[in-house]
Amino acid sequence: VVDADLQSYFDSIPHLPLLARVAGRIADSRVLELIQYFLKQDIMEDMTRWTPTSGSPQGAVVSPLLANLYLHELDVEMRQAGLVMVRYADDAVVLCRTREEAEAALTRMRAWVDAHGLKLHPDKTHVGDCRLEGRGFEFLGYRFEAGQRWVRKKSLMGLRDKIRTQTRRNRGDSIENIIASINPLLRGWFGYFQHAHRYTFPSVDGFVRRRLRAILRRQLHRPGQGRCLRDHTRWPNAFFANLGLFTMSEALQLARQSR
Image (cartoon, rainbow, N blue to C red; front, side, top):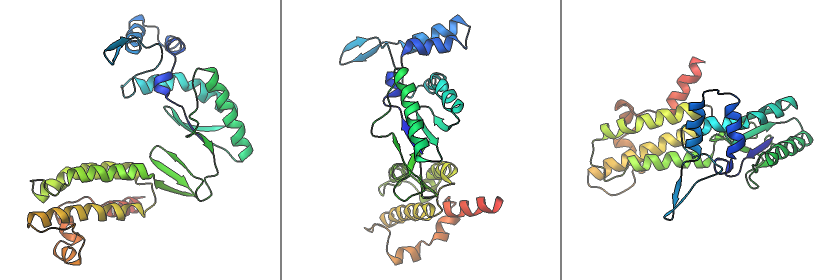
């Protein structure tokens, strides 16, 4: 596998060839002028105004579209070489049968990138054998390693941080309202990561319930983290289920039954 990442892509994409590619697909001069204004919008930095000659505003709605337009030729290049590349914006993975094929694919990709004013990230681009422990790769929030799909640690910690924000022990709200506020977050996260290893979801469910038990303890003016056996007896898993808490383990089981 070739795990490739373009370094500072949204900051370094050259305007002239990008606009030429846009003009090759769009004939309306008003649209072309609007995109040009969008790319060349002045930037204020340290009380100094300057006009960019490269780059596309990261996070803007049109930037991923422009990224796909500019990198489409790379997709064609790799496909014509008989290579299978999966790409999302500036992050790409090339699936290869042998290490020699992967090395050749990386060389081909680097040549195209260098010729088009871009650079591969030196630390995030590598060749590896994802069939082996410790040799996997991360792509779009997942980690693929040793034949398994896991949630990458950064994505998992991001979810926990969001849950912590919504389940502070001093939050002055009912447990029903708190559950209602975190359910959309849990459903959305599960909807995306439901294909990860099943061991992921019980740990997330347990973390959420511990946070909720800590809130209930605080409402009773008792210190603690909601980890003791007495808390589990007072507020068992069924207690939160009756209040409508979304449980990933149960959702996974239902999803597998429907398949």
